[in-house]
Length: 256
Ligand SMILES: NC(=O)c1ccc[n+]([C@@H]2O[C@H](COP(=O)([O-])OP(=O)(O)OC[C@H]3O[C@@H](n4cnc5c(N)ncnc54)[C@H](OP(=O)(O)O)[C@@H]3O)[C@@H](O)[C@H]2O)c1
Image (cartoon, rainbow, N blue to C red; front, side, top):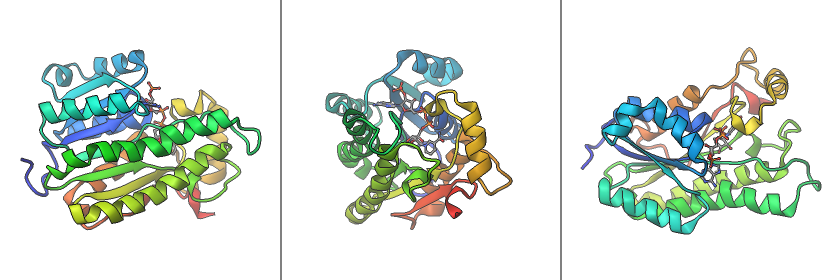
C-alpha cells in the first residue's frame, strides 16, 4: 500500500515517455523514487530511453514497453502487467500525443481521425482501463497533457484537429474529475506552451518564432522539466483538493 500523501514509492504509468515531455516526466518521477511504466510505438526511441536509465531498468523501477496507446489489446495487456507486478496504480499520465497535419479544410479526414484517436479517445480509454487499478491506491490521480492550443484558435497553432483534440481533452479532464471524484480519483491537466520536442519535426526556426511571438515571459521556452514540475505538483498531496483543473505552463502563451 502507498502511504497517504507520500510523494515517492508510487506506481506511475506515463504514455509516450520515450521522448520530449514524456522523457522529462519519466526523469521527474524516477527522481522522486517512484516506479515508472512507460511505452511507445518506436522500439528505437525506447532503447535510447533505457540506455539513459540502466540501473532503473535493471532493478525494475523503470519498465519500458513497446505498445500503441490506441490499441485496446495493448492497453489490457499493460493493465494486467501493472496489476501483476505492482498491484495498484497511483498516477496515470496521459502524455502521448501527435500532430499529423495542418490547416483548416486542408487537413485530411484520416489525419483528423488519427489525431482524435491518439490525443482524445486514448486518454479516455486509458483512464477507463486503469480505473480499477487506480482505485486500489489511497491517493490516485490522472493527469492529461493538454496544450495552449486547446484554449483559443491561435493562428500559431496550425493544426485544427490538434487544437480541437486538446479542447476536447480539457473537457474530458473536467468530466472525468466529476465522474471519478466520488471514487477518490482526482483528474487534472497540464497545458504547456512551446516545448522543443520531436513533435515540431525539427523546425527550429518555427519554434523560435512562435516563442518570440507568443511567450510573454521574456520569450522563454518551456522545458520538459518545467512540465514535470507541474505534473509532480498535481500528483502530490499538496494538490490533494485540486481536481478538474488544467494548469497552464506556457510562459504566458494563452494571455493574449
Ligand atoms: N512540444 C510542445 O510544444 C507541446 C506543447 C503543448 C502540449 N504538448 C503535448 O505534450 C505531449 C507530449 O508531446 P512532446 O512534445 O513530448 O512530443 P514527442 O516528443 O513527439 O512525444 C510524444 C510521444 O508520444 C508517443 N506516442 C505518440 N503516439 C503514440 C501512440 N499511438 N501510442 C504510444 N505512444 C505514442 C511518441 O512515441 P512513438 O512515436 O514511439 O509512439 C512520443 O514518445 C503531447 O500530448 C503533446 O500534445 C506538446
